Image (cartoon, rainbow, N blue to C red; front, side):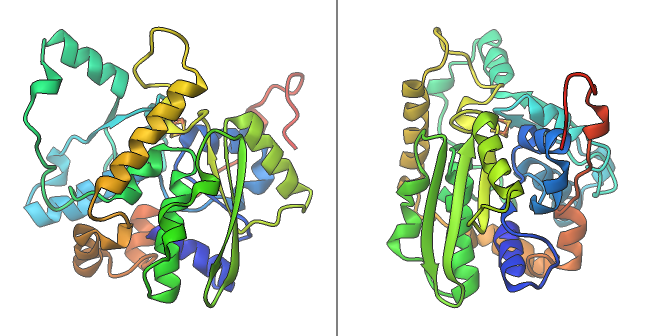
Length: 314
Ligand code: SF4
């Protein structure tokens, strides 16, 4: 909701930030850009990652709604990602007035804890997440796939721009799916024209896209970057396979996410009733003053931290 709104404002010139807009959910990618392409930091969406948005809301909106003192909340996120441990410790990630996310466990660490405690995970009964911040949509699930953030944001952006349900293409944006290193798609949105997007994963592919943007050869409005090949399904914190992960394994993990997306009754973020209530009762609207304060951030060059004999940033 926030990222789609920000994209719309950039396209309309309502915020003075450049196009293409880059996604901001992958902390490995953010740090890479801070080191090697600091001149392109203004292109990165100001939206915090889902982990940090959730943390900031847990200690404000959730605490208020449940009558809990936020000082007594310890937030722990379970992530596919070792870079998320770094991200939660970034000094700027405390807009709730507290450390927004206290601890990050990787899925590998969680799996070890489950095994160590001899919990037969597959025989546990199905349960739903707790209410207020527990409803899910397919748009959230596919964030773990290369191309998924783009597809989820495109679904929301279409609705936010037109006020209408997106056509079938937006629910099955196949040009941005799969393991190709750099993928492109174009889709018509009434009132905007043709929205051009690109998706890349793995930072060698990221460099190709960034060099094109730097050279002024980028036709896109919106670019998704994910550090890990395949996206978070193959993140550095995921359970290890017996043999090194291959693209065949990554493809199977991607297919599992898209299967979960299509099996859900709600596949678009704006259909999430709890998100609607969050805006209605607390944030008011995407990119409101409070949303900007809690859910958005900015990035800083780390180029001066590179060893001058080993690296040249710009
Ligand atoms: S792509 Fe990799 S670095 Fe980025 S959020 Fe996912 S697991 Fe973390």
